[in-house]
Structure formats: C-alpha cells, structure tokens
Image (cartoon, rainbow, N blue to C red):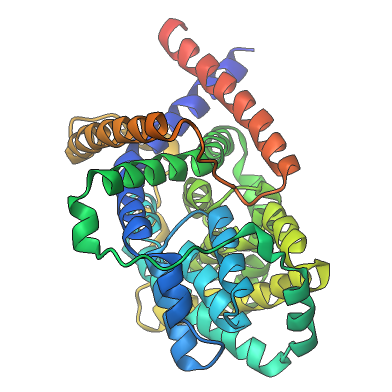
Length: 410
C-alpha cells in the first residue's frame, strides 16, 4: 500500500513540476498567437493563398506558422481555408505548419528535450510539409478532393468582409486589445483539457510504468547502442511511435512531457520525433476530419501523414547521426530526478507572464461584459470527444489533488 501511495505522490509531483517548467512558454506562445490571430485576418490569408503550386504551399506554410494553434483549432481553420477554395496541398501545409512550426511548441521542447529536438521539430516540420505535398502530387486525389469539397459544409465559416483597419491602428485600439484578451482566453479554453490530461499521464507513466514495458514496445530502446540501434530497430520505433500517439488522445502540447519520458527510457531520436509529429494522427483528429471531409478523405490524409511522419523521422535521425549530433541518451534525465521548483529564471518568467495573463483575462471579461455573451467559440470537435476529455480531465484533477494532499500530509 505504501508503494502505491509513494508512486501516486511522485506522479502528481512530476506532473505539477512538468507544468511549472513549461508554464511561461505556454503563456508567451499563446500571447504571440493571439496577437497574430487578431492582427492578421483569415480573409487576408484567403486572398493571398492560391490553389496549388510552390508559392501557394509556401504561403500556406507561412500563414500556418503565423496562426500557430492546438490541433483542433488548426483543423477548423484548415477547413475554412479549404472551403473557400484553397487547394488541398496548401491547406494541409497550413495545418501541418500551424501545429508543428509553432513558437510555443519549440519553447516547450527546448525545456524538456534539448536543442536537437527543436531543430528536429522545425526542420522536420518543413520536410513533412514537402513530403506531404510530394505525396499529393504523386497520388493526385482529384476525385477525393472534389468529394471532400462537397462534404465541407460552407455554412459554418462565414468569413466576413476583409477589414481595412491596419495592424498599427488595431494596437492602439482598446477594442482590439479586448479581442486579443478574448483570443488568449479561448486558446487556453481549447487546450487546457489536453494539457491537464497530457501532463497527468506523463507523470503517471514516468512514476509507474517499468522500463521493461518501453523496451518491449520500442525494440532496441535502453540497450547498449540505444541512441542508434541500427536501421531496422530505428524504423520499428518510428512506426510504433505514431501508434502509441494514436491511442494517447492528446494534442501536441500535452504530448511533449510524454515524449520526454520516452526519451528518458532510451527511445531513439527517430522514435521520439515520430511521436511528437503524431499529434495530427490521433483518434479525435481522424474523427473530426471525417466529419468535415468524409471518411475517404480523412483516411487518405491519415495515410499520407503517416508515411510523411515515418520518413521524416528517419531522415532527421540519420541526418543528425551523419553530423555526429544525435542527442546523447546519457543527457536524458529521468523526470523523477529533476528539481522542479527552484528560484530561477523559470520562476521569474512565470510571475511576469501570470501578471500579463491577469491583464488579458481582465480585458476578456470586459469584452464579455460589452458583448453580453454573444460570442461563442466553435471548438471544431465532435461533442463525444469533448465529453470524454471533460471526464478524463476531472479524473486527472482529482488524481493531482490527491497526490498533492499526500505530499503535504503523508
């Protein structure tokens, strides 16, 4: 019994510590994201993005980078762009960029995993877009695309008339600052369940799951040459990682601490990168895509994403190996061995951004007051996923509260 209580306490402490380490990066990332979303409008992107071709894909990538967001809001923006006539390749480039080439994601990866993984995330993200584009060019899914366009119900996203207000004027206007506050709070409303569940699961896995489990799942992990165990074992890990991610259910921000746990257990760079890239091949995303475009298109997108993810994870792995830059597994500290709560730069940044968040929440409340609650945000997800996430987040909150109580009284 004591063992179980000790594991419970350790897992809750690890989850809270992970979140504390990443908190400032979340807040800064969502602040930047909110500024860009209010200052750069969807209509402007729409006009500038074309049907197909290198320029369109490059613009889709650039706009995706600008409107970085969680997987679910990326899906609904992608649908809006596709329904307004953007081609399949630029639309998917937008979707991949807005979940992989993400400022806040890079920061969180740097905190948990180190610079090689940040390079893997950004360079790999661009490669993933190029591979996806190439696969679309090879497979030419014309009929599928026509079918998907029929399925996309245009009525959801009425893009209004383009605004003529410049971003400089917006920054001087109190009304637009209230919009920035609204967007910031909505970003958090969209991801808090993913984040809460993701960090809780990472803590539990780190404290309770034995190494032998990871070694059975990821062949070659934790062995003598775990960092580079030969091509077939590396390939096996890159294939297993998206499957593991598929069943974790968690969006990109929640799966970084899990990726840190995998790396700590000796999973290769290719395996960890494939896991991080898999936030768009999880079950809820597949269901949302099916609701938007029909099952055929959803499975087609899933297929090309999986091929892209595995290919790019291997290319990045062997690229770094050739340069002698693969991350050293010795450097991967087990989560339980970290000192989480210290007086350091993280504490300072957390305080600064918590104060900024308080101001943005105040602006949001003012906007709500003026709006009398007219403004509802469409998560873009089917309600079943939301319900499951809600139940899981309540369980996660109770688990963490219990662990915190044990840490205080036990």
